[in-house]
Amino acid sequence: MKKKKRKLSKTGRILTDVLLVLALGVAGYSGYKVYEGLSTYHESDKTYDSLKQYTKEEKKETEESSVTEETYVIDHASLQAVNSDYVGWVRMPNSYIDYPMVQGTDNSYYLDHLYTKEYNYVGSVFLDCNSARNFSDKNTVIYAHNVKNGTMFMEIAKFEDPSYYQEHKHIELYTPEQNYIAYPVAGILTDGSDDYVSYNFESDDSFMSYVSRFTSNSTFTSDISLEPTDQTVLFSTCSYSLTDGRYALLCKLVKV
Image 1 (cartoon, rainbow, N blue to C red):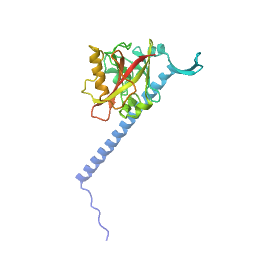
Image 2: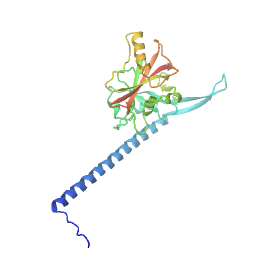
Image 3: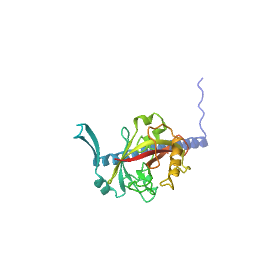
Image 4: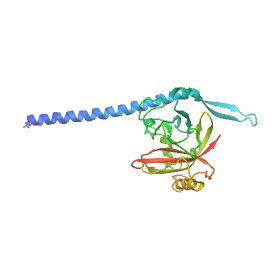
């Protein structure tokens, strides 16, 4: 005999309809958030890719040794025309890091604004507002997000893996006044409550104590060491290895 299907009561039908609407709402919101994230990444990528028109690699043969050298040339004037907050360009070979740098009046604005000043939570690469924009401080501090699509400073956080250093032993910095090479010395995994940022130091001893804090806790072993007379640059980004995590990479700064 066929079993009779039980009819839902009026209350049951209403409850079922409500649950269905809620489920569709959650699915719709989730889909919107995925779309929003992808759209944000797309706009950011499009903006920064367009700025690369002001950079180019030139190959030239040296007169002394007839060796072909590659030179990265930056059109600083054009980048300054786009944004007067421009301070230079950062590039790490064999990585996605290839961006203009800015400096705002605080350390909040460029967390969620692109180089073109459009609102976008991917943000920009920016100097700490307390750092000298001409890199004259003992330690210059540079920030950017660790973006999950692999862009901005995600690859700074990759120094958490000791093997990553072996293929990434220098970072290039280009400014209108001077070019630099930053050689990674040590990187530490910490959190947002840690006071790991310093700009200038009272003495050589205090500077070397700061350096020692990094080298003794570094996630990798570097070929480079620091002396009291050296200048440094600190690259800081988020880390997903800890709650409110940070990864800070201390580098020796050398004029080219």
